[in-house]
Length: 111
Image 1 (cartoon, rainbow, N blue to C red):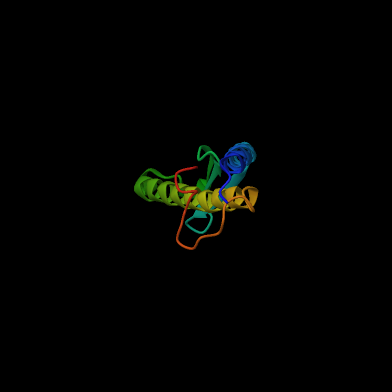
Image 2 (cartoon, one colour; image 1 turned 60 degrees about the vertical axis):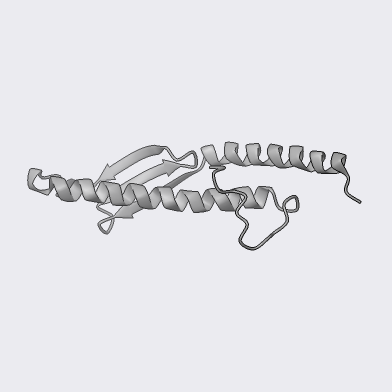
């Protein structure tokens, strides 16, 4: 039989675990690179750019467009990868509370 109080307890537990996972993710960083390492971008689990490193050999006025493209590429790569890391962390933190239903993405929008 369905127990509403049991379900509400699980929801509160889920909320607490998600909050803990988000706090851990805020401290997590990930670095991605573009142009064979010429540009590196580090982002946090909160999807904030923390650092950009540019190899000095490509800092020339005539390479400004290439440099901008590499920064965008590295930033997008880092953000996509941290999103995968964040979803895995949230999933791990909520294991046993939320059933694994194929095709159901309850974590979309959490991060």
